[in-house]
Each structure stands twice: as C-alpha cells, then as structure tokens.
Image (cartoon, rainbow, N blue to C red; front, side, top):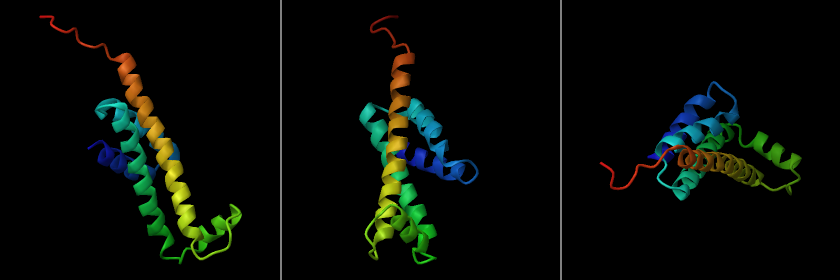
Length: 122
C-alpha cells in the first residue's frame, strides 16, 4: 500500500513540480503509513525506482534512445548500443535511494515524535 501511495503521489506531483518533490512526499507518506523501517525504505526505493524506469522508457523509446545515449556519453560510458539501459538504471537508483532514505526519515521522525500509549492503563 505504501509503495503504491508513494508512486502515485510522486507521479502526479512531478508533472507540475520539480523532481525533488519526491522527498517530502515520501517523508509524509512513510510518516503516515510505514509499519517499520525496512518497510519504509524499500517501499520508497522500489516506488521511485520503478516509476522512473517506466517514465524513462516512456520518454526514451519514441526517440530511439538518442538523448539517453548522449547522456551516457557525457557520463563517460563506453559507446555501446545499451548506454541508455545504464542511464535508466543510474537514474532509477538515484531516485530510489533519495526516496528510500526520505521515507526512512519520515518513519523515524514519527517514532521520535509520537508518544507511545502506556501499556495496561485504563
């Protein structure tokens, strides 16, 4: 549920706002919904990793990966026909790590701020 929530929010908000909007969205979603730290990090990571890979393919396939191959050349990757795959993986990993750590921070802030209920009190 958290994975889909982060992916949907990031997809919609990235249409109108800068790319870094993913960090407060993942933070807030994990603050609200994360069950534990592992759940928070991996939900955030895989939500953005898959979203950015899918969006990268959506934009790269129609132009036959020309821009992605040029970005690969700027990064100093060897000139092959699969530079675009490496560029997509790099961007997916960067987005995934950014969102994963932001979601992890949201979970830990909730743990620090929320006062636990006393056990056995009436």
